[in-house]
Amino acid sequence: MKVTEKELEVFAKRLKLAARGPEPVYFDPETVALIPQSSLEYFLTKESQKAEDEAYKFRALKAQIKKARPELIFLSEIKASVSRMEFVKISVKFDHLLVVEAKGKAGGLCILWKDGLIVKEVEYNKNLIAVKISDLAYEWLMVGFYGPPYPSKKKKAWENLTALLESHQGPWMCFGDFNFVLNENEAIGGKKGSPSTNYLKDLMFEVGAIDFGFSGSKYTWAKGKWGNAAIKRRLDRGIANIAWRLAYPKATITHLGAIGSDHTPIVLDTNPQACFAHRPFRFEVAWLRDDRCGSVIDSAWSDDHSGSDFIILCKKQAATREALKKWNKEVFGMCQDRINSLMQRIKDIQRQPASSQAGELESALQVELMEWLLRSETLWRQKSRELWLKLGDKNSKFFHLSTIIRRKRNSIDAIRDGEGSWITEGNSIRKTFIDHFKNLFQQNEADFPPHFEHLVLPCVTEDENAELCRIPSHDEIKSTLFSMHDLKAPGPDGFPAIFYKKF
Image (cartoon, rainbow, N blue to C red; front, top):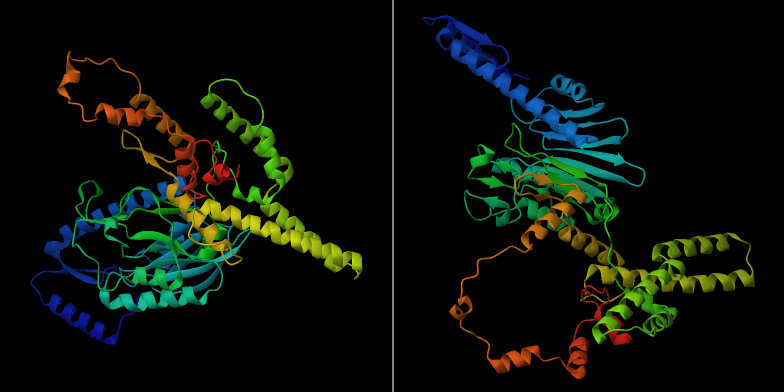
């Protein structure tokens, strides 16, 4: 720690005054403080309690690291020296670290990572550490950020972060304690209303950042004990640009439990382990661009079936589903695989000596590639549910990103069971839902009082009831169907409105 000449003079004066006092004094070199003998016992008890608290926090950190098994850790407000963080690195069994040393007993940042990760230092200051991470697929910028809570220091810290993110051309991700909330739903208790300048909102707008969302507890900071804290905020989060989100579409953030801290640790998983789940059939509109699709549907739908009209309809739908799934697998194929194959064939032809035959083949392949690119865009447009934007060669990335955001919003990454425990494993979540609704809808014996039905007066007349029970005419069904949007979400049969309009 650096001490100025003026601070040294002030301390020397205090030391002389203490020496002339009525009782001896104790000099604590760590805090650079003078403690009178009468207060020494209280001071030592307080320091002992502080040491116990620090030891508990360190044990809690080790336990959470052992459970989450991260490859990289970002710590803010470490309030520790480089030598102390070297000890932490060895204790948690990590191999490398980068430290921004604390200034006295405040601040300090640290990143620790393991040998398997390729990390290059980019930039660091008292509010952020930026490193480049290289994996098997991409090289991207990771920024660990601590937003200062003091108004006088906010502007400079956020300007530095904005400049850094704007200057980086590739994928980037930033996470940490931003000390801002995006809306009132991320806060409970305390003062209402947002500050005059929300630097987090401004940053996300300027650089086009996307919030990861989260699973787990809604808040990441509490004032006081978590169990009865009246003020809570979601101050810690992860954000990324579009390029990073497209590179890691399955990435998730989980809020862990707060142990020995007023903040909950957040865990970023760039590639969460997927569990097997049945994927329902969905009719792909891109199939309509292939002339063979119509004959597959006509053949499957024309098969004879027995039963009532409703049973026959269900059997025709099931036969058509199976025929389309088989045709898609054996004939139509995956759009991206076909695109990659055509691009490779075009590349191979262009390497060959020039000839009229090669020119004709290349032209044919270029036409086929254009068709498959349009089919791919049609596919992603349907999945994105963005129906207001027309197809075009500039919209594929938008449809892809919209699909990722919609799937993330609709996914259930964690639930809390009846006992208050969080469940994060996919199969366990599925089983909890099934067990809950089985128990909810099971038949129980009820004590039905006599003449109970007479206590509730009818509110639907006989004429209204007859109209409600009437089977719709063919014209009414057709009119309703053709008034629906072509690509609106399909029903349980997997067929959107466009299927019935076409066939």
